[in-house]
Image (tube, rainbow, N blue to C red; front, side, top):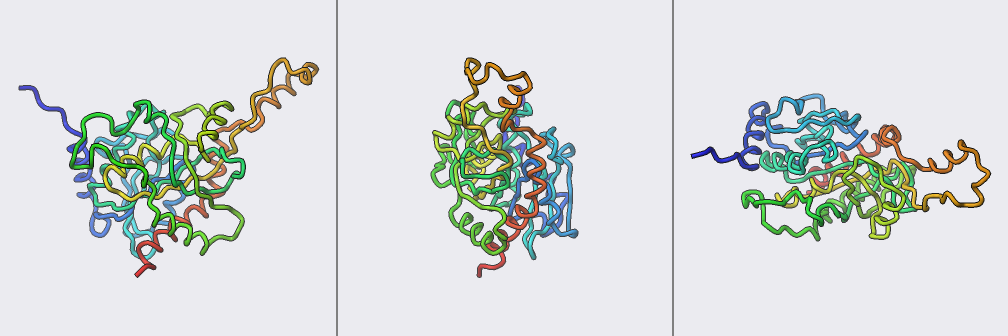
Length: 316
C-alpha cells in the first residue's frame, strides 16, 4: 500500500516541534506573531537583546524562502514591551514569488500550534483613497480578495477540523478590540506628523504594480489601499481562531486619472521626453516602497509596541 501523503497539519506539527526544541520558556510559547512587511523589518530592533533566538527560514523544515529585497527571511523569537513573548517573521513569502498559496500561509498554521493568540501583520501598500498621503498608516478593518472569490483561496481543498471550520466567517476578520487598542496607542504616541486611518485593503497578486484602470476599479469597489500580501494570511489566521490586527504603510499614491490618449491634440507637439514625463507621473517602484518604509519604521515600530503593551500589560 502506498504511503499516504503528509497533511498540512502534520507538516505544521513537525515545524512547530523543530522550533520548540530550539527554544526555552518563555519564548517557547509566544503570545503574539508579527509579520514584518516590505521595508518594515526594523520592528526586529525593538525586541529585547535577551532572551532572543533567530532562525533562518532556510533551516526550518517545510518553510519557504523569501527572495524580495527588504525581507530578511528569518524567524525572531524574543520579548516585546516589558514581558510579552513574541515571534517575528522578518520578511514573508509572497504568492508572486512562485510559492503556492499554501506555502504563503503555512507559517500562520505553525504559529497556531506554537500557541499564538494574536497575529499582527504589516505591509507596504499603494494608496487608492485620494485622502491618503505617502507615509500615512492604515489599520485594516476589511478587505477585497478578488483572487479568492475566483478560486485562488488558501482554504481551498479538504478541510482539517484540527485547524478550524469548513466555512469560517470573515465578517469579523479584523478584531475590533485590537483596533481600538491600536487607536488608543496611537493617540498616546503620535506627534501629528503622520496620520492613522482605518480602511479596506484590496489584494492584488502581483508582482506588477496595478494599471490606472485597475486602480480606479479597486477604488470604486471600496478599496482604500492595494497590496500584494496579508489577506491570505489573515484568512488562515481566522480559520485557526487567531485574532487579527493589520497595518498598511502607504508608500505611494496610486494613479487614478486615465492614461493620456495618444490622439490628444494638446500632445501633438510634445517631444518624446515630455511624453515620457507625462506617462511616468506617479509610477510606483520598489525602491520607493523601501525608502518610505525606512522613514516610517520608527512610528510603525512604536505603534506595534504600544498596542501590545495596551493589550497585555496596561489593561488589568
